[in-house]
Image 1: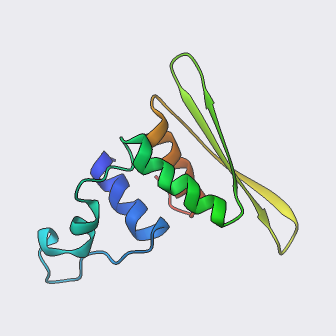
Image 2: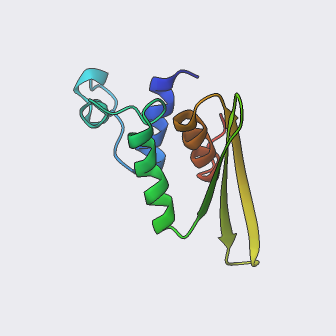
Length: 110
């Protein structure tokens, strides 16, 4: 999956903005307008917007930086059964690791 596809999933499933509709050219879709100038999967300041959004949802986010990797853990409390769920991603850069961990938290299989 390339960065563009990951960014589109972020906009649709995390930011909850509409995707292109059937019969509408992709370049005319709202998502393209939203993504213009943003790259959640490669730009740390854009990715940090997602971290702030998840904090509003009362999730804990841990970011660990190793020699060659970045580990991101997203933890959420499932209120129905008082269970803590953890979603994890390991990548070579922080923005991509943040995006992938958040998408897993949102139930998106990569």
